[in-house]
Image (cartoon, rainbow, N blue to C red; front, side, top):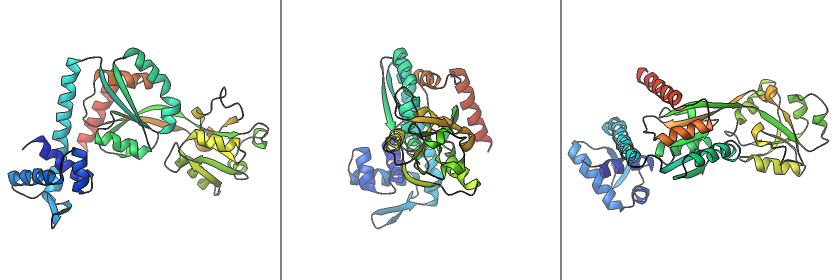
Length: 313
């Protein structure tokens, strides 16, 4: 039994049993992948995959049972390599961060700047995606830390820690009628709205607020990116609803913002890591730079508490 055999099994599941994609992911050949899987099955004494001819179509019942063990072995081997690197080079390495656009554009810069001053030898890799894509990057090992408001807490394999609270803001051009009266959901329904795609940056709370009041907003455009939303508001196409951190008065000179926290409630951004993953010292330092309340001690306790709770369920 070897790690390449275990990786072949794991990637076959991740690639939905497409051996061509598995071979590309592992930088090998399709026959090589098939051989690795067959050799492991022969050693275990049972088949891991259901087959239709030469094609894999799913996991057998024994395969489903041993897959978590394979994942755990590969994760621990990854942790062991990280631990070795930790002692060889305490202040250098790679830190991969996955975040939504709003977090990467507005919330992360100050933390990244502080981290770079503390660890100039650490190479930072910043990946952007939807909340679910952020979670998938964590699960695959492509990212060490993930930051988003939605989705992260919904994955059992991740531990999501609360970072900061924020509200939405309504943005309009100067002189807009919404600036002259108290803001209300009813008032917003009189105008075409521009806001986030479903599943992004608190959009669920926006939808829920209108639904609760029995109102049907006229959302004419949705986007992942607050800068895109602001651009179309500047063009006069409608009223924007964005995260309050996305409005920068010193830059957005052609727009005005009204806090909408009372309408759409408070959102909570979370930082997540993969459950059981080994974290180098500078990862803890980055977490604290992003969320000062999450000191190393506080983070270690939170991770330990989450792991204990998971073990009891």
